[in-house]
Length: 242
Image (cartoon, helix red, strand yellow):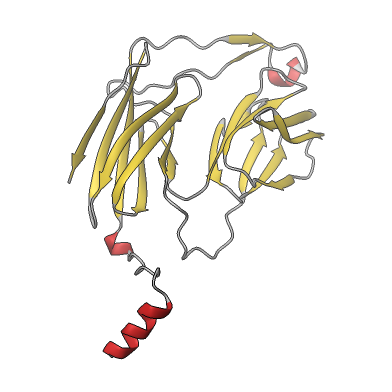
């Protein structure tokens, strides 16, 4: 037995033992906002008002009271390679033109996922998605058109707009690995199967921008991280292992 192990070590000197799921940890994050919540801006509708209405409120901060939890903040654990054990193709993600708005308004997904674009409205929309000013897709979709599918091959932030209805805006964020999530109505998200060790957490919110914190994930354990935005963008991290 010792001879077999020695031969394997000599042939594959860089081969490390795979971490089992039991060795991996869980990171629970809550993102808070402290300060006055501004009212949403309202844009006048100049086209298809019979369907879209005469005005459209823009997305604003959605903050839970009294916890101050911030909804729709995208949380990513940085610097972790994708697991070698993944073989299934990424799940297609759906972005809909619905009610003269993009649904969901913020869509986090895995790099390599097919993005499936729908138009559920009785009017034409033009879904125009850009990354670093470069066009990812620009497609006109008549009412009830067949879905258009394109694979997201690059990680990062994508901006979504409808060229026919300027008030329609949204975002797609593509991550290189599965260690990401988006906060719910109380500002919580939970990321599973995180390799133990020291990691950086990045938070992105469309109005408040980026936020960072350091986290140490214990084997077989869970770490709770609280990050906070304020009106002047000051923040701090409060970490509790359990």
